[in-house]
Amino acid sequence: MGAYVDRTMQPATERALETYWAAQLGVPADAFEQDGVVVGETAHDDNVQIFVREGTVAVGAPSTLVAECRAHADELVSVTVDDPAALGRWVTDRIVPVETVLGPAFYGYTDAESVAPVESPARVLTATDEGAYGRFQRAVPADEWDAGGPAFEPGETVGIEADGRLVAAAGYEVWDERIAHISVVTHPDYRSRGLGRTVVSRATERALDAGLWPQYRTLDAWPWSVALAEGLGFERFATGSLVVAQPSNR
Image 1: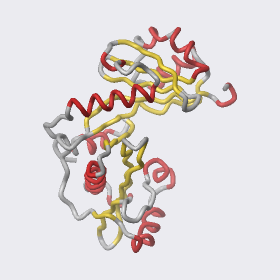
Image 2 (image 1 turned 30 degrees about the vertical axis):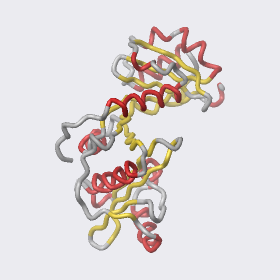
Image 3 (image 1 turned 90 degrees about the horizontal axis):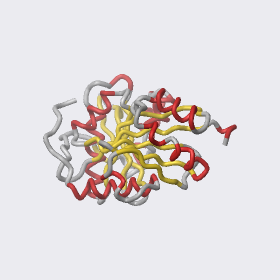
Image 4 (image 1 turned 120 degrees about the vertical axis):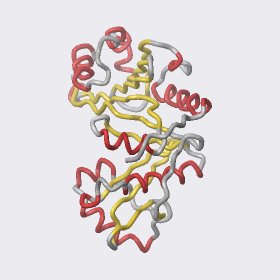
């Protein structure tokens, strides 16, 4: 995947990301400057989101669960917050029955000063690539495509070809007019060749050119994916987990 780069994001970028995520989790704007657990109220859904950044454990919970989460917040310090099973047990035992825990996940970001792009023939796809894109998508297992396959958007989606066919693609979805959430998928027959890295690199450059914060999110259970991001200059901003409550109990 290449060597890690010896660069760091600008302090202003980190502060902006801290402010953004504090708002998303409903915690005070300076929450990530404090050690310990802080619980905020979110307006998004019934799930509990947990963000671990250095000494801070920020918990975003819906209004129906905020009181319970705050009442048991100190116990979360002793829970292995990077362990989905431990998080699930904590929420199930203390808060609400859990359906699943998504994570722990790497939330990585880069900026113009820390990015380490790679040279490649990756290019922005056009409308004439739609047929090739369809064939590429059919070659990827459906569950893998659902997890990371970018939508085909002529003039936006990035792809790379090998042996006369499309073999990797990346794109991004804009969150709140600020974050470029990157997705990537590679043809099963062309993995471990660095092709995913090349399209993510090109998509990242495009996001930066658009004035967005490129975000690469992947499970820590997939170290090769984390290494891909870090090799391009993405830094771990936080480790996140999403605790999904059982629908029948909400």
